[in-house]
Amino acid sequence: MNFIDLALQQSRIREKIEENIKKVLDHGRYIMGPEVKELEDRLAAYVGVKHAIGVASGTDALLMALMAYDVGPGDAVFTSPFTFIATAEVIQLLGATPVFVDIDPETYNIDPEKLEEAIMQIQLESELESKGIMPVDIFGQAADYDEINTLAQKYELFVLEDAAQSFGASYKDRKACSLSEIAGTSFFPAKPLGCYGDGGMIFTYNDDMLEKLLSIRVHGQGTSKYENVRIGVNGRLDTLQAAILLAKLDIFAEEVELRQQVAARYAERLEGVVKVPAVKEYNVSAWAQYCIRHPKRDEVMAELGRNGVPTAIYYPVPLHLQKAFTNLCCQTGDYPVSEEVAADIFAIPFHPYLSEADQDKICDVIRKFK
Ligand SMILES: *Cc1c(COP(=O)(O)O)cnc(C)c1O
View 1 (spheres, rainbow, N blue to C red):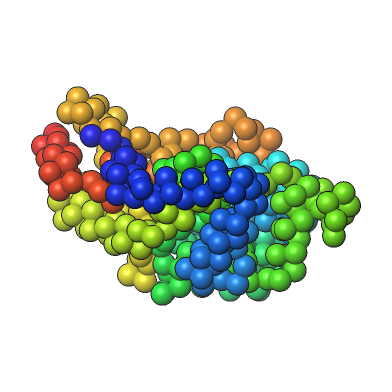
View 2: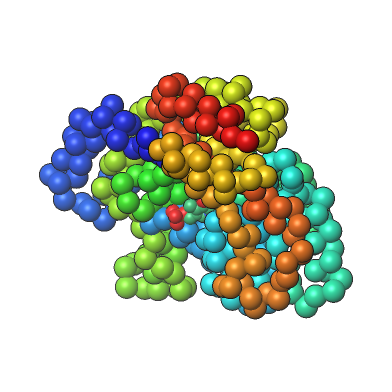
């Protein structure tokens, strides 16, 4: 049994993938070939946002968005400590300060009430200038954007949606990646929509941001190739990865449906046995991970391992306790909900093609565990 089985998906669309790769080999436009634009157009339409910009990874998507907002030293950006390192890493990489805000104990997403407290505290007690909010749609479920966007307007902050795990999800009938002025997603192979390498996409409604992002994507290029008007990066999405994603996109909506079925079956069998994910009634999750909680986590994981079931922990250490952020002088106890969740959460195998037999086997081991 695999934790995520990409081979089953590939066997469905192998011919189309090969055909798309062959087209790229034939035209030879490996950098910014026509497939990149085609993918941008199709994903912008899928998400319902005006502009999509293909980039080299999810991390670059977030980094470039922050660069487009001119985030730098002296700036505070509010985010969750219960996420993948990249979220807060890019803030610090630009010399700005990540200000962590604890999470909701049910959804594991940033807690809007605590967010307002943190914004007010920075205003009163800090020299930092509050610039923006980076909510994370953790495990594929969107954060509470109506609340977050209202706070952003009140305090004049930007909102950058870290949708690396939530492509395909929706919130109040709006698609993830469209829930604030700008969003970044990832096509890392294990994400809901994954390519065969690294890739990502930025989505925005804002025409000025588009202009800046197109420039940042190629070394801060101006109107001609050798005119550079700002500092940028080499942040382009490979043509080959775009070609692969185009093949995968044909079956993506169906896969999002299959993910709902797999999640529902897990919930049916595990509810009351362990703490299963809580999805708000107005949310549809993309189910990047299926994470459950158990007071004897390490022992259940070991028992699953003995039965041939792979597991993983997202995330064993909240970011405020990572060595990389010692400069922020955080301590154990600062974000208690994140710390509690990190102590007993783990992920079980999840992908659209997980068989009912495998699901039942996994659930049996967990149900029998004493
Ligand atoms: C995967 C991920 C990223 C980074 O994406 P890459 O494509 O791996 O660079 C950022 N944020 C979150 C929450 C992620 O899960």
